[in-house]
Image (cartoon, rainbow, N blue to C red; front, side):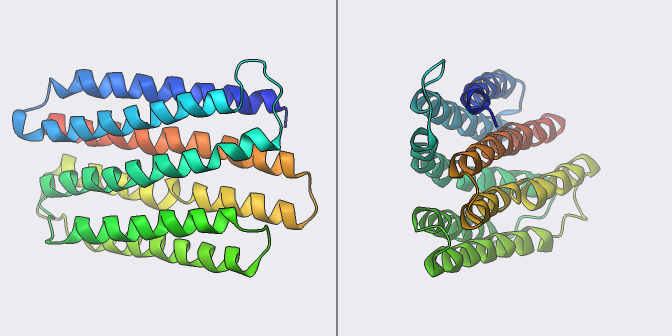
Length: 234
């Protein structure tokens, strides 16, 4: 993969997140006062991601700087800082739409956020270790199990009593967590297994970085658009 594509991907991530934050902020005014928190969460999530991507695009020296695997890997702690803040907020946002669908459950969001923090922290620990080491596998498994727990929790919520538009939104948002969030462990696995197999570590890091950017835009901006659309119909 041409490393200039990696640099462009980070710039694209910044632009997409910034545009998403502006869109959600503008849409917030069209929501009823009791539902404006949905627009606020969506805007804050996209804004945090935009700030982090602005820093990351400088880290990979966009535009035109000489980039190596060192610069690509330097974005990893920044990505995890982003996820540590934004993914719990995404789950809180999910809880707000679940409430619209009549499926609010005591303690659900708290359990989801705790599992999410475990997923992010162990995912980070699994990435900073030596490629192929036992600790990497252990942390990867723990992180994946936490993600599976989140999926189990969101699938258990009964939304059958809520309005159709809210039910559709919850079902779509579930798929973001199931399919959209699956992209992250896939990206990590690609990087780890390519490294073990003796592949070019720069290419492995480049492929994973682009995968993460695409996933971030889909899972933050796309997730927010579904949530805000449901709140507008409320």
